Length: 114
Length: 113
Image (cartoon, rainbow over all chains, first blue to last red; front, side, top):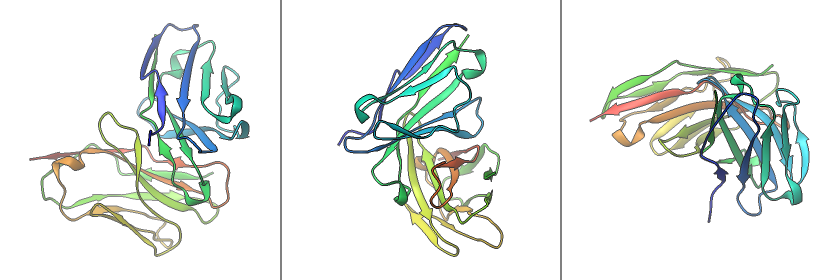
């Protein structure tokens, strides 16, 4: 069974540019989460989808970040325009039943804004 | 709000040494507690969990006990191996909360042969 897949694995962009990260969850997992780890600090929750609906987006830092999950399958996270402080590792995770607390994480996308 | 404080790394041990990584938490409710591990080049994996006070989670020789009185969930292993080298994250999730996991800052463990 394929795990959670994230694309790209690395991205280097200039300040002001746009970047789109993609996450393919495990097939059949209704719950999809985005997290990020900035500058070696804590991994912070960004948002949670249940199928195509945003269940909780309280962790989104500002309106430069836009997450979508059309059709309830893969998800994208767009940063527009990117700022230096957006650099970090963006993790995606999915789970079938959140009550069990077992979320499967992808390898992450390392974003560097220069 | 909720928070998790982990012992700062990096931690370097010799093979077969005893490992302890301290973790304490602050939460308003009754959280579930987790340890996640990230091996080089891989995503985070759930290592073990405990859902209520005095529960002990265990996996791959690692153990952690949910101590409500000290708000702690320290990770221990009696004899580490080189293959245990990874970053370890302590995390919590409030029961019923939609806000999902709150992570600590991670502890880098390196085990030398």
